[in-house]
Amino acid sequence: GAVVSQHPSRVICKSGTSVKIECRSLDFQATTMFWYRQFPKQSLMLMATSNEGSKATYEQGVEKDKFLINHASLTLSTLTVTSAHPEDSSFYICSARARGGAMTGELFFGEGSRLTVL
Amino acid sequence: AQTVTQSQPEMSVQEAETVTLSCTYDTSESNYYLFWYKQPPSRQMILVIRQEAYKQQNATENRFSVNFQKAAKSFSLKISDSQLGDTAMYFCAFLYGGSQGNLIFGKGTKLSVKP
Image (tube, rainbow over the protein chains, first blue to last red):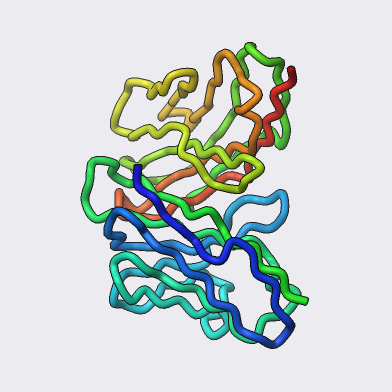
């Protein structure tokens, strides 16, 4: 099946610094990638949708300037948490949709990244 | 607006028995996709089963099957012959906006399979 890889899986940073999380589709081209945030024991909340070569579409309430998303190629999207604060600590998950293919509508998920801001 | 409701925060089942997880949704769209995802302690989201709304036949994948009631907007997941490895959070998800749309998730049901 299609594989999506996220890196790093865990990151600890100091308050005020920026952190970049990468999401790569390893064996397929991803026309669209999605970024989710998951709080402990809660569901996934969509943060933004990114299409290759265009600006990301952010969900209501998500700060564009804090969560920078870049989808520079068909296999890579990055999420940068700028000037991170403790309240940004969370589990971030990406997913990708393949270009074409038989599995219409299916999204493939990365392993997630645990961000802890001290 | 689309909503997905999972009314069972937690459930437990004995190994080898059958359990059903419920999910209801609300939408004005006529064609859409529904999914059940499993999130084990590793946190990796794993697709369990999918259903296209235009298909009347209920989807099945080995021990997993769904009861899709389109008129009632209900999409329950049945797990037969439960195994210890089925212990996980299960999320019902609705894909809106066509096949290129976005997923909206329910709040999840924590399933524990007991030996």
